[in-house]
Every structure is written in structure tokens, then in C-alpha cells.
Image (cartoon, helix red, strand yellow):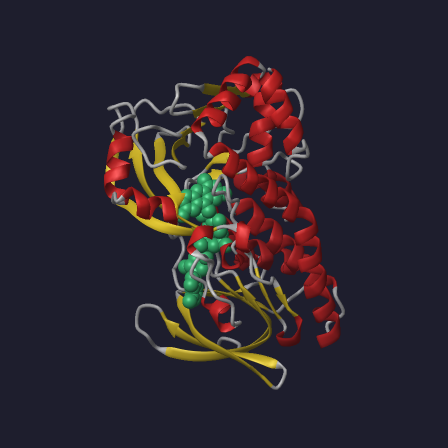
Length: 406
Ligand SMILES: Cc1cc2nc3c(=O)[nH]c(=O)nc-3n(C[C@H](O)[C@H](O)[C@H](O)COP(=O)(O)OP(=O)(O)OC[C@H]3O[C@@H](n4cnc5c(N)ncnc54)[C@H](O)[C@@H]3O)c2cc1C
């Protein structure tokens, strides 16, 4: 019979929740449950771009093999509505690479979740969190089997909310959702190509699409191309257009050799890190990670790296802490402090860069400067996407100066 009490209950088995579960188990925790309303493998609306910082996280989790068989991105292209075009090829990169992978989330998330299950995590995938209450020093979680609705309750000492962009745990902790100025809307569709495109990522700001906003086409290298569009909510509302129509316009700008699968066309919101809620709740022994805590880069829309880094940091800290209420409270506080110290400047810089690039002329200038100077091109992409060690360290003002003189 399944256990009914756990030391750590993680709601959401996406990259953030599964990274956290793996970190806890690797550091010696033995009583961890992963709850997810979906059964895995499951799809997640995403661009499928796995940033370079994820490599180090997978190494820390002893899961580097998840990348085996996938080809690293060899080229990144950005285009502006005024004709500017900047291309970074992997053979032009001197230091750490800002290029990562394009991997279907169905596969990536399943691999992470299965690794946690193999390490001894209790598997409650296929169960939805309906409600939760903290009383007498422990959490009571009310779950329902996602298909049949059959109810069940479990208890846990610590609750970790990794349940994505519309997090129920966040609401239960009394935190409102982001203001619409800090939420993007998006739509993506999958396509196939024969022969396959090489593994590459292309970001297009185009005059035919709402600005500020960008469209992307990311190729896995094995025949699948992820195509989509993202922009902030006020821009979308002001455009008066429907996401489906915007995506159709973008498809018209791409090669007609792409064969689209309409069943994979879905929309989703992105809560941006320009408005993050508190991450740690030591009094009630809880924390938020990943999209549940709005850990999405306000410029690029990337969130996998930040969510996994948060999961690793929190899982490690909790497992290494004294297993007392006080010990765990300290670990929760430390998690928030370290995460903010590492990423607040990075998120703020990307938010300002987004504001600057809302002017098509400036964006065009950056791309043209990057096209002339491969080092500047690499540093600009690193500023947005990070590198193998995490976030890029070139200050924004230096990038701006180099753009002006290039
Ligand atoms: C269109 C689009 C494109 C994107 N492209 C990229 C990209 O290319 N690269 C990148 O890095 N990021 C991208 N992102 C962001 C990225 O998808 C997220 O940041 C990432 O998935 C966050 O991981 P997570 O584990 O926090 O949440 P999720 O991956 O959303 O996982 C949350 C899990 O919680 C489960 N859940 C939710 N509610 C409940 C409940 N009540 N009970 C039980 N389980 C529940 C869900 O089933 C889900 O499996 C994109 C986002 C969108 C919308």
C-alpha cells in the first residue's frame, strides 16, 4: 500500500520539480513524493530550447546522460524587422558556449522524472493537487486521481510548489498571479522536415507580427521543428489579433517544406521574473520553484534553466539541513537568498534590455553590430541565454558601448 506521509512533497514533475526531487534523493533524503496531474511522458507547451546552463545542472545531478543522442545547437540566428541579421555559428565561439540543445519536452521531462523515480521517489503522477492545508506542523494534501477523480489525502513535512505557470500551491500560499504587464502570451506548433534541418535556433522580430514580441523556429536536428510566437499581454491585447492568426502569418514567412501538425498547436502564458513572489515560506515549511515562482527570463521567455537551478539549490539545501523544523526553515531562507543573489541582476538586466529592444532601430543596430563582430554577437547571446556556467557576466553598459562603436 502507498505510504501516506512524506518528508518532502513536490507538486509538479516538470524540470523544476524533478530537478528538486533528484537533488533531494542524491543528497540522501529518502522520503520524497512527486505529484503531477499528468501521466508521463506528457507534452509541455514550450520552445524546447534547453539553455547551456542546464548541462552543469545535469552534471551536478549525475544525469548528464540525458543529453546523450541529442545534437548540440550549431547555429543561432536573430533577425530584426528592419533587415538586420546576426548569426552565431558554434565554430566562431572562443570561450564558453551560449548554445544549448533543442529537445522535445515530452522526452526531456520524462527522463528527469523517471530518474527521480529510479532513485526512490514515490510516484504520484496522474494525481492532481486539489487543496492543501498546514496544521499542527505538517501539510495535508488533498489529491484526486486525474482520470477517475478518486480522492486521497497524504501528509508531508515540507511542501514544494513546482506546479507551473498557473500554480495552485502559489495560490494556497496566498500569492496572487503576476500583473498582466509581467505575463507573456504564446502559441506554438510542431512541424516535421525531411531531410531534417541541422540543430539550430532562430528568433525573428518581424514587421508582420506584433512588436515587441518575437517568433521562433527551433530545430532538434532530427526532423522536428518547434515554431511559435510570444509577446507580452498588453501588446497582444493592443494588436487586436488572435494568436492563431499571428502564428499563421509567421508560418507564411517560413520555408514551405515544413509539414505542420495542427494537433500540437497550443497557447500558454509565461509569468515573467520581473515580478517574482516570495520564494520561501519558512513558517509553513514551503517553497516555490520554477514557473510557479515566475522564474522566466523577461526577455527570452526561457525558464527551464532557472527552474532547474532553483530545484537543485532547494533540494540540496533541504537534504543537507538538520531534519528539524528549524533546520529546514534555515535551508528555505538560504535558498531564497542565494537564488536572488545569483539571478536578480540577471533578470533585471534582461528586463532593461527588453525595454531597449522594444525600439526596432536599437535592436537592428545591435544585430548589425553583432554581424560585424562575432565576439559581440556571442556576448549578446550569452547575456540573454547564459552559458555553461550559468548566467553571462558582461555588464549591459559594455554591450551597449560595443554596439555603438562596432
Ligand atoms: C510557448 C512557450 C515556449 C517556451 N520556450 C522555452 C524554451 O525554449 N526554453 C526554456 O527554457 N523555456 C521555455 N519556456 C518556459 C518553460 O516552458 C518553463 O519555464 C518550464 O516549463 C518551467 O518548468 P516548471 O517545472 O516550473 O513547470 P512545468 O514544466 O510547467 O511543470 C509543471 C507541472 O506541474 C503539473 N501541475 C500543474 N498543476 C498541478 C496540480 N494542481 N496538481 C498536480 N500537478 C500539477 C503540470 O502537469 C506540469 O507537469 C516556454 C514557455 C512557453 C509557454
